[in-house]
Length: 153
Length: 136
Image (cartoon, rainbow over all chains, first blue to last red; front, top):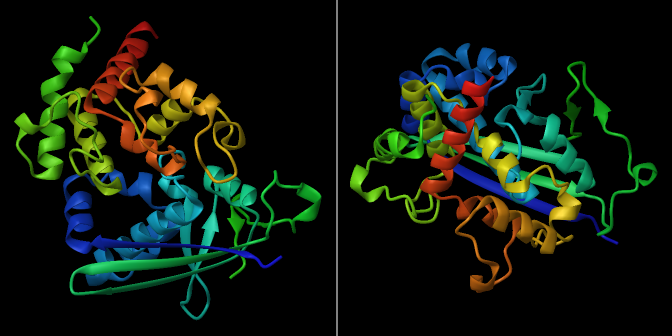
């Protein structure tokens, strides 16, 4: 059987994110991981664009997984950067649990921003099968140092 | 004294109105946050923080999700196509007093569950949280 492909896209108003975090700075720690905040803060004048892109990525993952946003924490989806700067996804907590149920094998995320908008596009490649996940039939996800699941991409 | 939904209503109305840029009068208890008032995820985040700042009652989007799913595992809440099954619908009727499955015009999918959540449901959750904090 061919793999199942799940996609998710989200578009975020950069100014909306900037205003939200300016008015309520405590939100940052509940939405973004320390690593995401460090990465984006280092981008100084483009901090809000990068944060908005990551926010869009979290939403896009939730959409691709099929309605998980209310059930998972924002920090359950983390965007990390590979050595060359290319973004990758790392899932934690409930988002990782839903991804395992979906038999997630591979994920890709792209981010872009222009004209005051940030966009994220996520593609999740899942092993076929509609029944409950058989733990021994699915490759074990790679566990990260902080307990998250690094999704190969 | 425990804060009730009547006292919380203006707090919630102001928070929603400010976050969405609408008139507080539009924020009626029976309105659904997503479908009727047009809130998106980022707005929900904004609304809950505004309420927390004024009322000191902390509610997260995850708390709302926990209420809606009630700890029922995904595979028991809906089928493989994410359509909410009898177990899920029964739970939703329990936690959302206004919800009536007989009025559904099409199968309810998991991503539509949050769309059922009304201003009154938020008020009830806040009041319950305040009551629990007082009792602790």
